[in-house]
Length: 166
Image (cartoon, rainbow, N blue to C red; front, side, top):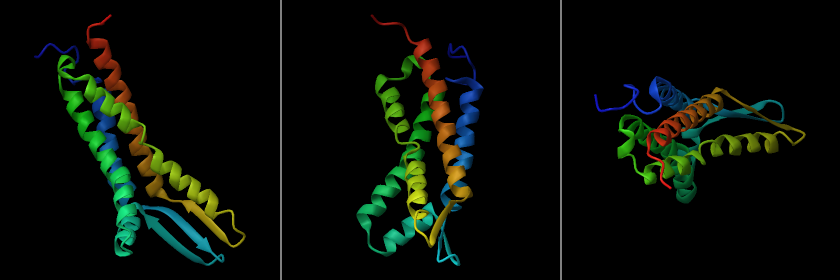
């Protein structure tokens, strides 16, 4: 035993479960369709995050491809990796930099969900157009929320275990 109060790591079994849940929900969130658009009441198309990235790459929109890929796929995976590391390390070995990194990444967690929601509202505002959310969006949002909750539980335990400076 390394002196930790909880043998399950920082944040305990709850943090471990939330990280696992976030990682399990992430693949369906990027593979399943997030959005369905309808034009003229009969023409429908569905879009997943990976379909969107592939279309951007095919259209040679490299900047947008990198931007969306980085924030939609890279950021959640990086956050999960850092959370796993911080979850397993003894609190005294966790640097303030690692805690700031988690907090910074957490600020971007639901940005994609917000952008898709705004797009749905804008697309639905036309008289012959409509848009609806699909399961991919809900999986993606649930993954982001799970990782945000894990981050909060881990941060709480790490701060409680560190000596008070003053």
